[in-house]
Length: 346
Image (cartoon, rainbow, N blue to C red; front, side, top):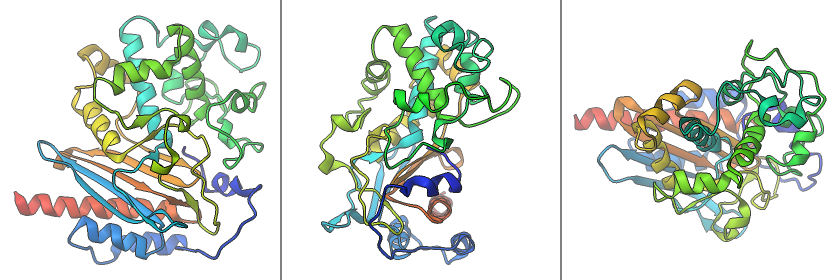
């Protein structure tokens, strides 16, 4: 999930085990962009590990070609299990792409309306969420609702809570809005918690089943899971925070997938094969076509690069301090390498 660095640093109120791992100061992480560029993606991911991240996975797929897989570092640091490019990983807010896609499909079918309000769909919240009668579904999908973000709340702890639970919602009920609906942009995980509730209520069954049936199954995505309870934990890459020995893999914090499954989904999202024409038009009007994700121990990037017709997914299982800056720089360097290779071929 996206959060400021200040919020990220709150996560350890309940954590006591400390080690001595440190990576970059902010300026050092930024300057890494100007280090000599290696000639291959594998050399770059190896260098990222040499600089201090525990493990990294990269998936690259150019249109019409077989996917390339890269990995370096540790799948499990304590057990010295090497990073596996086919491992499962917590994809965090990348999951919003799947949920926004589900909304687009339901709107196209007439099951949902983007212009109906939160009050229309969840009337019990009218007295608990400010402007509930003015907040439309469209505003919620686009993060323009003004509903406070529960992960910004002082009582939220990444190390103690699951994502999207009723307890999370209670953190922001009866709180003033961040802004009047539609007047500003404010990224809020609460929007997608509520959208999940609305989809489930409208469908009459869990919206996760709709996502499985209408998005995952048609694309053949058998390595995408909507809960940690659906997987063998041994297949999930361990997640770490700089300066702490803890492995955070057992926290239930959103969707889980392989880099390949995310890559296949992202390709279908961008080339239109995920949608009918009507669904595509609706989706384009409400949400973006790429995303990053952050939960405790896991940082992911999923983007399609039109100029080289290539989907690139990056998973890194080290967060904290200035790893966010560093991992973004690593990603940009990988894109530079792929662009140079594309120019050479063409």
